[in-house]
Each structure stands twice: as C-alpha cells, then as structure tokens.
Image 1 (tube, chains in turn orange, red):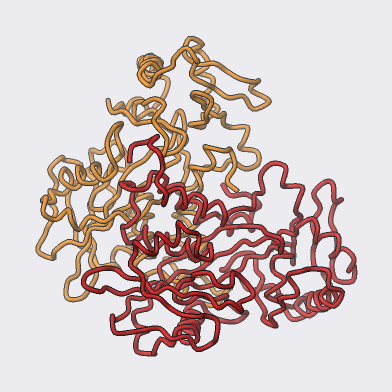
Image 2 (cartoon, one colour; image 1 turned 180 degrees about the vertical axis):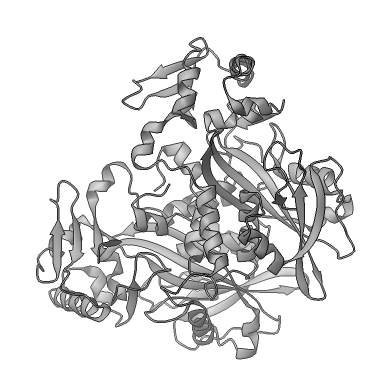
Length: 317
Length: 317
C-alpha cells in the first residue's frame, strides 16, 4: 500500500486495538495522576490518584515519600522485610478495603496471589491478591496459546468463546487457552495447565507447544492501571484434535479460517489483549506484512512497550 | 532458571547486545544533548549538539525555533515546499560540509538517498544522503534475511562474513543478506534485491521468503544518532542451496549450527544489529524461552523500542 493511501478496515481496527491496549499514558499532564509504588527501594507499580488517598490511610503498612504535589511515592514500610511479611501486611489492608467496599475491583476477589517484582528476572518482593493489581499498577504476567492447524493446506485457528459467567470480558472471543501467572508457577507450567484445564489438550501434544516471545502493553480502566506482559505460545495441532473445555471458563470453541479471525478482530469480538496475541501470530507467520499493513512497525512497537525498563529506571530510552 | 540465579554467558551477552544497540538515551541530562529536527511541522529527527552548531550556519536552508538553552529545534525553511526542493536544499548543505571536511561520517559518502518521514506509514518529506543520517538522527529502515535450512533434522543458519573493505563493521559476521532501504524501494523488493546481489538466491526460492516483523532500537556513536528499524525475513532454504556473493560485500558464507551461532554472539563476532535479528529468530522459533532466559521480556522490549510513536508524539507511552 502506498504511503498516504486510505487505510483498510483491518488496518484501522489494528490501530484502534493497539491504542485500546495502551490507553494508559505517563506523558505530560497524566504524570500527576499516579504515584510510584515502591518496595525495598525499587519501583514495582503505579498507584492511581483515586487509590492513593485510600492507601495512605494505612500508615502502619505504607509510608509516603515527598509531598503529593511534588510527585510523592508510596512504599511498604521497611519493618516488613521478607516476602511473607510484606504479603501479609498488604493482605490485611486489602481485606479491610474489601470489607469497607471501597473499590469495585475487589468485588471480583479471586483468592489467587500474583507475584510482584521490579522485572521478571528478579525475585518476587511480595505477592498480592489478583483482583487488586490494578490498584497498585504492578506488572501482571500471563500466558496465551495460539492453537492452530492446517486443513487442506489452509491455516485454521481454534478460537474460544469466553463463558458468559466470566468476571472479565464475558462472552468475548479468546485464544484457545490463556491465563494469568499465579505466584510460584513457571511460565511453561502455566501454559500446560491452561491447555489441560481450558481445552483438554492431551499430554502427548505438548511437544508441539512452542514459546514464541511475549507482548507487552499498558492500559487503564475503572479498575485501575494494568501494565501486562503476556508470554505467547504457538501450538500446531493435528487436524483430528478438537479442544473441549473442562473448567467452565469457555462456552465453546470454533475452528476459524484466518480470514474469519480477521473479521472478528475488525468486529471487536475479541478480548483486546487476545486479539493482540493473534496479531503477533499473523505478523510472525508472514500474514501481516509491509505489503498489506503500512503501520506494521508502529503496531509491533505498541505491542512491546518497554515496561521492564520503565519500572526499573523510570524511563524507556 | 530461578530468579536471582547467576546469569549464563549467553544471557550476559544478550543484555550487553541490547544495551549496545540502545546506547542512545533521551532521558534525564542527555535531553540537552540533542535538538529535534522538523520538516513541515513534524519531527523527523534528533540533531546531536556538536552537529547543531554547524547546521545553524546555513540560515538559507534551516531555521531555528526557540533558544538553544530552552530546547530549540531546527527546521527546513518553509520556502522549500516539495520533496524535491527540500532534498536539493539539504543536499547543497551536505555537499558544502563534505567539501569542508567537517564530519567524519561524510567521508563515507554513498551517493545513495534515504527517505525521511515522521513514521513509516507516511509519505516521505525529503530524502538525504545515506552517510549523513546520523547527523540528523532520522529513522533508517532496512531489511535483514535469516537464511536457514534443516540438515539431518538440525536447524542450521547461513552466516555471512562481511568483506574487510566494507565501510562499516568490516570483517564481522552478518545475516545471510541485509541492506538499507534506499529512497523509493519497497521492503520486499529490497529484500529480494539483497538476496540476489549478496547471496545469488535464484528466483524460484523467493516463495520461501517470509516477512516476520521488525526490530527497532536507537544507538549513538561518533558518527551521530541512529534510530533504526529493520524489517526481518525468514527464508527456509533447501539443504542443497549454497549462497554465493556477487557484489563484493561478503568475503564468504558459513553454514552454522545454532549452537555455533550463539557462540559467535557471545564472542561479539557479529555486527550488533545483525545479532539482534538472530536473537529475534531464536525467540520466535522457541530456542530462547523463559526456561533458559530470565530476561526474555526485557530483551524483547529492548528490540522493539517505540521509535514511531516517539518521533510522532515526543513520548513513548
């Protein structure tokens, strides 16, 4: 496509998708809208302003550095030194906030802990309740598995329809399997667990489960700030395999042509980050190229925003 | 690998490699070290401070906004309205600077034009001599082709040794083929041209040339600032094919096991951005995963720094 040409439907959908997944911005005026969250001297999160005012009500657990105006930060007090001590201290605060019904997100309490760390390579500093991560803006990690096969030489992808009873994005389309990385779980271990629970993939097929990198992005909604890194996997399946859900999180699966998958992305039928995982698949497999997508490098950059460096150093370059 | 474990040689080499390719930083104090370069009201480059003082000596072509201290920018004067007028005006300046022997980089004059634009999706605003891009910090685009095959079920990669007479990185290892995107050339067209010239790939093999995305990074050296976006291609070759150089830019080719390729990356035998292209290949093909690389997501983010958004908006989030 020539530069300056009118963008097609799919290209417009992709620009909107990467914007949706990156709705949070730290540039300009929004800087005053959040406060760094620190543990043991390292930044691990971004606290939205409307959350801040509630957290500073717990001076036994949190301490404030600087003034709110000059860009203050919140830290877990140094008296909590171990992972367990910090985890317990924050859990007490969250239990109290949940009981007081202060935050909508805590209505979706999961009883599942997510590790909190500066970068993925470093040891966790504490763990927090999954439904609370948006309050602290800590990086969430997860896995997404593209299950695909070749039928009559055509590439086809297994797409899940999320159950209508899911807490988040009910009824939307999704990758064959996906899930958050609970505290203590390995990345590949988590991918295998999700394949077993969500799609009943038998053990002998896991030799075809290939990690292919990750996507990263940062968005905000009424629940808070969500910097996320999703490790991606491709799984080439025999065309005789049909996924069957066994945990109630998927209403049904459909085997779609890549053209149909694209139509569903255009129609905003997908959970946004799951659509992003498919876009990454389409790029890696040579189906989105500079021949059909003028914004290719922009899209790729917006699917890999530098969360690790930002949290570590406060800057991206 | 457990978090906090001692990093292996390859992991340390990868961290060093992504740092080398991203040696430029726009955060903190270095902001005073460059000035935006604008054309038609849009930023298209970053001018190093030591270059700035020479360019402002050409007030017929360039105009300064703001003071140097407050963060001024340089723009091509509005009287130059068309691509050709801007191209000719800058060419006149560069010819004069070359004749005066002000910049080392212009000793490598290529007589080859690179398009300059805000983002790749937009129409070029002008074109400048290839050897001068570091003076203006405009984004350079190029193509890199991973030529690989399977021998006895083992993945092997064709690696080029750059000619000792190359202007840049003489004698270092490189991808099978690579090259800069000259003004007016299409991305796939450029990849095919490089495959033909550098490796004598016959026409019938180009159906196996698959675009797989891009990498982006920004470094600085004595020649200036280099924001670069390299479109990547994988080319699965028959194991009977042997590349033969026909343009004198490659001294010889070697078919290496992926283990040997990794050793060469550790030994810093590669041109840095070409090593990065191979790291991207290893990640996409499941050979670098969270099982063997704790910094995986950091590395991926540093291989896709948001140049497009930064040049368009001045910020990355």
